[in-house]
Image (cartoon, rainbow, N blue to C red; front, top):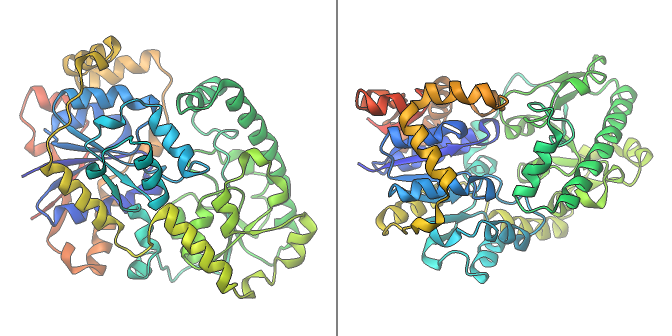
Length: 454
């Protein structure tokens, strides 16, 4: 039986969609391993994985990509950041900068625009490039309408903030954040400018939200900062009785139960549109540098605070413009594929096709000395010793935000079983019982979750 590992970077955002993908694969007699971002160097080897689904391919993970390929493991990409760039050509530029796209065993595109941009640049061969969409958006479709519905919610406006660069939850190292942007293709000056603009916009957004919440005290608000944002700077908003903080569950769970979404340059506005919720944007606050064109297109964009306040109470009753909606849906399909509840099945089919294809081997000259050294240390030290030594020299990363529990996976899987009978024979468990005692057991994080058919 073939073994596939799915790497999970942001469980709050991606776990539900990736469990759905894992379930689709498991019905095809594939053993699927959900592996956390920081555990992949160990758990992929410990569990004898045949194919790894990377959460992205960027400059900052090319060495890991090369190490896995050298071990004969197939590697493909389902990019969970997929449509985050300003346009599809910009996204193709980011993939091109890795210099390794030709060695990918498969690549799943979110939409036709991305597919065409990558194909036009000849970055990936046509037989290994698939237009699939992202499984997490299956939950925006009619097929999974009941997945998020909660009976215990009241009428509220959801506020999704999006300032992880200026309001960092896990790091005080500003230079490290700038370096991350430089690694994915920004110039040094462009990264500094983006940080500067984000800081200014963050302060303006907080001021606006305070005025909004204070002015409309008969309305209920739920504040949901970005998972990588610190909640403390928003404490000044939480003094009001009509606002609460909620950082649990995915953004789509919150959106499905709200009456409208308030955001600025946030891709969750697209999720709101998919779920037939109004997305309201205080657009006058944003600088041009931070604008996200598609997020702007799906939103009701206000030109001033006075304009926002004047129309806020009656905005939910406004009917949509069918012509504008048609144009938006076409654009969404171009960037996100059809929202038809079938993305998980399309990605599943792409992975099954890649498993049947020959491995694309990578040349020895492509692997750096540092990468080879890390490989030796991983195998020699094992999981616990490696991270103990690592913690002595490197600041602790945002591990909590990237971890997930067996109970969470089981809960999602059980809900999927209620919706789809095909998942009835599936179960999830820790895979450690399958690991040989000794060498490979030392490599295991004991945190990966296996989804398989009984």
